[in-house]
Length: 306
Ligand code: NAP
Image (cartoon, rainbow, N blue to C red; front, top):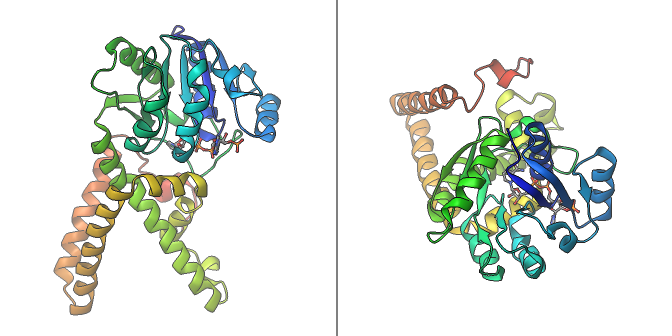
């Protein structure tokens, strides 16, 4: 694969930016990758592990002469960063982001940007519960979806170029309207995270009364919840604060379904439970068939648990 952007700036150097960097290097997608993070500690770590060709001490130096600027900070920080970099952007540059919520990013970043740059918001649907500059790896985006949310009047050449870039990184790319994106992600990611946080919180309360048996005898189902509930608190706080309506809509539906299952258990309605679980099992099968997860027992961790 050949160079798609001469100079790429990664603003924020956590899990997503570091994974992007290693994937960009794997395929030689950029002439030079420049990185910036707000803390000295993260910048020092990045320099130590060779994350980015150049790490700058100011955000303005990072975006200077960049052909592509990728905002890789929590959703709640995107607007502030956009305001800082706006006067320093190269005319004709493409500005994108990796934020998990799209309407909020469009509204908080868009107004700061000059008219002579192309703003193409994006969201790679790939992640882990780890964060920080040392958590990234080149394969994170392989065969995962990256959703681009270009505004209607966006330059199609800039969108096509960004699409090729993400395909070079390893993703399958699709385009979507911002509100639709936020609703879909509320179902597939945001509400499940909140449920996992809640379940682990409930178990933690219970753990205190059962002398930590919850941790000691932790079974596969609960361990999967704990993995999700270990995700970065700042990132997820921002997701819920900025995708409020869609998340509340899905949680409302979730509560209704939960009550229906609760009633089925109370009334001994085994048919209802069996039909429900048969339907959900088919969804799991279709995710595996689509290549979006592994069929290995216990997600390939090689440990058995009840
Ligand atoms: P991360 O590993 O926690 O890294 C976040 C980076 O943003 C760090 O470099 C941090 O700087 C910087 N940062 C944090 N708060 C900031 C602020 N107020 N102002 C400026 N910089 C700030 O996060 P990540 O997982 O890479 O997530 C980055 C973005 O990707 C988020 O918008 C998230 O929604 C999105 N995303 C995440 C996942 C996932 O699973 N993790 C998946 C898809 C998309 P310091 O290191 O200096 O503190």
